[in-house]
Image 1 (cartoon, rainbow, N blue to C red):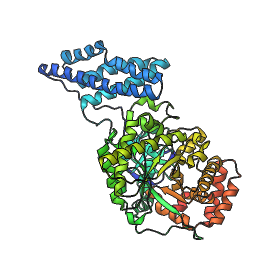
Image 2 (tube, one colour):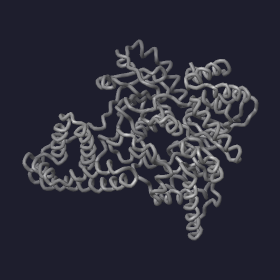
Image 3 (cartoon, rainbow, N blue to C red):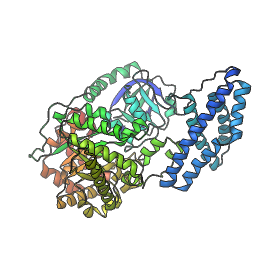
Length: 583
C-alpha cells in the first residue's frame, strides 16, 4: 500500500480499479500484408499525408493570423516533413520490401527519427521531438481511421489516471461512469476542473509520482483529504465505504420544486445554473429553477471537435429553450482562446507555452466574423421559442460590444427580409473578466443590458496565472473582492443587473462574501445548487456586510479565508457536507 498526495480540484471520494490513459501510446497493428496489397497500402499512406497537409495548412493560416510567426513556422515545418519525398520513399520501401502495413511502416520510420532527436540534449532538438510527436499522432489517426488512442474508453467504472485530462476526455469518461480523476497537470480553473466540479467527479491534480500508479490495480481517491491510496488493504476499503456511499447519495440528489431563495432577514436572492451540454439542460426540472445563467456554448464545438453549422446550432439551442419552458437561458457565445483553442487544434506543442493569455473570447469571433454571424443567427432564430439572453465573453473594449450590436442588427434585417421570427429586443450582456475592460467599465454599462462577472478568468488576469497552473484558490483574495465590489457599484449606478457566474459562486464560503459586497444574483454548478441555497438562507445581510468590510481591510487570501471559515463555523447550521468543506 502506498499513499500519494495532490491538490483537490473537485471534492469527493471514490474507490475502484485504475484506468491509466496515455494519449501517445498508439495501437499499431503489426500485421504483414500480401504482395498484392503493397500498392494499395502505399496509396493509403499518401492519402493520409495529403489529408494531414490540408489540416495543417488550415491550422498554419489560423495561427499566422491570430498568434505569431514563430508558431506558424513550426506548423510550416511539419508540412515540409510531409512533403518530403525521401521520407515517403523510406516508408514505402518498408511496405514493399518488408510487407508491413502502412501504419506499422510509418510508425517504425518516425520512431527512428524520434529516437535520434530524443538522444540529442540540444533544446532545439527536444522541441522538434514534440513537433514530431504531434505529426506522428495526426498521421496514425488518419491511417487507423479510429479513435482508440485519442479517446479514453473505460470498460468498467474506474478511476481515470493520466498526465493531464482535456475537457473532451472528461466528457467521454463522464458518460462511462468514471469514479474519479488523478492527473499530474491541471489547475483549479482549468476547464476540465470546472467540468469535474459541475459533474461532481472527485479530481486530484498536481500528483508528482503519477507513474507509480501505472501498475496499481486499485485505488481509493480521497480528494477531500488530497490523497490517493494505492492498493488499499481490505480494512481501509471497508473503513471508506460509508463515506463513499454518502458521497454518491449526495451526488445524485435531485432538485425538486422551485425554492424560495432569500437571506435569513428576507432579502430576495437569485440563483441560476451553469451548464455546458444539452444533456445537462435536459436533466433540469424547469419548474425547480430560476434560470440558466451560463450556457457555455463552446463545449458544443469541443464535444464535436468542429464548429457546428447554423442548423445544428439552431436545433441544439432551440431544444434547450423548449425544454426550459419559458425559464430564461443566458447563452455565452463561443469563448475560444487559451486551453479551449488548444483542445480544438489538438497540438501537444501548444500545451507547453502561454501563448493565448491575451487572445480569445469576443475578439476571436470578431476576427472570424462568419463564425460569429452563424452563431448569432442561430441564437436569434431560437429566441422565437422562449426567453434567452446573449452574453459576450472576454470583452476588452466597448468597441467590441458596438461591433457585435452592429452585426446583430444586420442579421435581424436579414431575418426580417426572409420572414423568419425572432425576439426583437434580445438582451445583450458582457462578461466582465479582463483587466482591460475595468478601465472602461462605466462606458460599458451604457452599452450592455447586464453584467456577468467571470471570476475564473478575472482572477487569472489579476494574478497573471494560467489555467493549468492555478493550483492556489484566489477567490478570497482582497484584490479580487475589491474588483467585484467596484463592478457591483457601477452596475447599481447604471441600474443594470449584475451576476456572478464563475466558480466562486459555487463556493459556500465565498457566497457569504458576495452577499456582503452587494451581489444579489449568482449562477452555480448544478451539484452546488442546493448547498448554496442552504447557505444563503442562513446569512443575515447586515452581518455579511460588516464581515466583508472587515475582510476587505486585510491584505492576503489566507487571512480572509481563516476569518471567513471561523465566521461560518460559528454562524451556520451546517450539513455534514458543508462541514466537510469548511473543516
